[in-house]
Length: 272
Image (cartoon, rainbow, N blue to C red; front, side):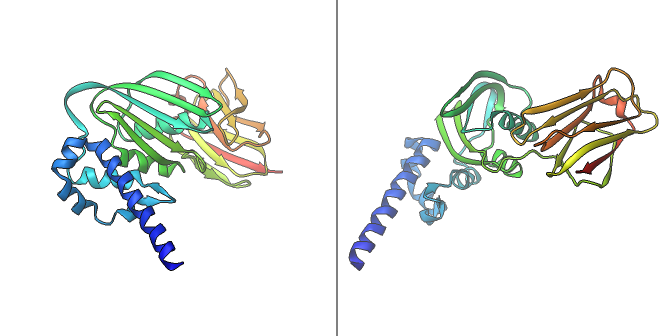
């Protein structure tokens, strides 16, 4: 019985090692892999440490390869790069999160090539003219801040990468606010995003001197579906409005320009 267990364990380990080797080849190319195989085995070390819940820890593997010069992320001149992202659910929340994550690592200009939503999930492909590939480790760090995880990366070619992302614990980076507590929001450089808990009843916002605030407030659920919009063409000193049921996020902006909120706002959310 013991021999059977040991044999099974060895089969699993060796099978995983082969899979890991195949993954390394896909990232650096078979020719380079076989040429540098001894060095690669040394820097990789214990292959078992690259398994996580039965799957290859792609980010950990890529980090080691990148840090040791086996992954080239820089071109001599700009090239068109295709990047595809795949998720299972929460399309709207994903688009908000991936855009903010890409912006955070310096990728601000790209065009959508394809967006497909079907029973299997959502696929979004973008094209960018760039001298730098997306650094998977940096992108992973930003996504982790937002409760997301890169579960797999496939290199289809030097200029074609596919990321599979888990949205199971996805969340926006927002200012968490409690009910029945006042908050002073400083001069914004972008829209205010508030994350709230359940039990919210009404939203109170007070504008400050020197502002010319034209309220634009949007209430979202956890999946970033719009529940309600409050907007006003006239300048307002304050507002009071109900918080819709199932609200998770509140975006506060000016209908025309953020410069109209130069002195910031005061926010209070009352409980039921």
